[in-house]
Image 1 (spheres, helix red, strand yellow):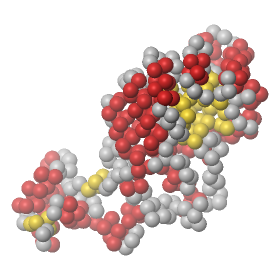
Image 2 (cartoon, rainbow, N blue to C red):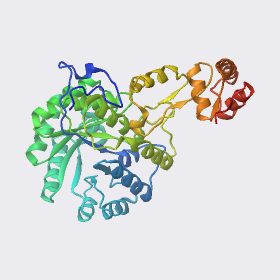
Image 3 (cartoon, rainbow, N blue to C red):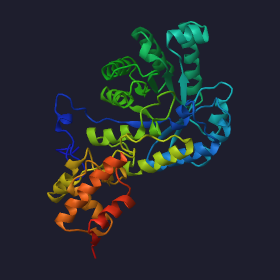
Amino acid sequence: MSAQPWKTDHWSVSPHNFDADVAVEPHRVELHDITIRDGEECADLAYNVDDKVRIAEALAATGLKRTELFLTVPGWLEAVRAIMDRQLPLDLYVDWNPERVGRAIDLGVRHIMIWYLIGEHQQTHYLGKSRAELEQVAADQIAAAVAAGCHANLFMPEVSRTPLEHIRSAVEMARDMGAKAVTMVDSYGVMRPPAVSYVVGKMKQWSGLDVDVHCHNDFGLSTANVLAAYDAGAVGLNVCVNGVGYRAGNAPLDEVAAALEILYGVDTGVNLAMLPDLSRLVADITGIECGYFKPIVGDGAFSVERWGGTAKLAAAGERPLAFAFEPEVVGRSPRVVVGKWSDLGAVEKKLTDLGLTSSPQQLQDILLSSQRAGIAHHRPLHDDEFLAIALAGGAVDSE
């Protein structure tokens, strides 16, 4: 890590992120994408086999090393075969389905998620079995996965509402049975970041294994909670493209990857500049847009109505100070619009982009007319609307 990781040629974030009292020493991290798996649980989308393959290929091209799918949905065998046949530099994780997992292993899968519904209400009302019975089933499945030469990860929905003593029993069992990792699951997004850090730390202490984390977004805290898990030593961070998933979704890949790289100084292996294309692919496949205000990939993330200050900072060699980070870091460009709140800098940039120039007085007149038009339209001006105002105001070709 550089001496000043908060300030580079492309971003200038808070140096307090790296103050001794709060800094986090970078450690191994693996972004575990669950777009294909948790996306299956979204009420308003359905993947076919080709969709899953296209997403897996795009994940691998973007630098992801882990993805996951269910063996419980139609087309599972074709999807596993197609992804494995492509020999992507991507570990494929599947759930332990007793009737189907053997076929997946035969196709080369070596990473198994052992689902253990640890929540008491799940055990009592969903399954009608005791905790001891279900923990033993999980132990047997871990043993079988290990015997088959697989990496077993104990995935525990509802850790967030489970007593610590039950969590400890489960992770110690996983360690004793030969699992390589355990996953803390906040199934309903009901934990605060400090609670996530606390439980992840306990699981790491008790098991000595890698701790992964899976956080839902019901309170809009999924990214913060995943980062809090990293703070506590979590290794496998579950993420989804565009945050797709059950109900309010999961931690968005783009937010977690960019935060780790920029706010922590951690090399995630992800090509941040490819995130917009990945986001667009998943939006096209699912038919679900990510939202205007979505950080990193949303249309509003780098849209501005004022540009004068940015131009001055750029002239002084301090352009990164105009943004949380320069848009180009994540494959984006600034989008300058002209409307009710614009300044002379925005009008001048827009004229330049359109190949036009004007006198200082004309610039003032064009700005005032554009501001009035923006208020009348209740939105910024489209390019053709601004062009008409600019030409009427005396702007001419710059050549």
